[in-house]
Length: 54
Image (cartoon, one colour):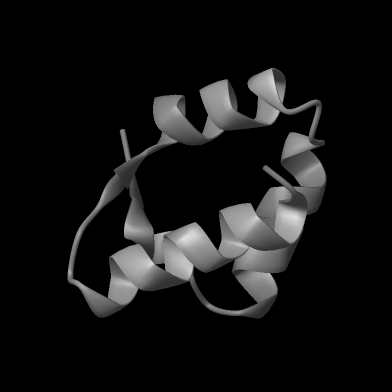
């Protein structure tokens, strides 16, 4: 999974009114060698940060 695919996954969750756990995002970042800071920055830019829950 690339950074773009992960962002698309989160955008889709937002459209479906689903929440995604922060643990799930951390797991996907570690599994795919993605930088968490980069993902969070992109989510903030696209105003998707509120899709994440503990």
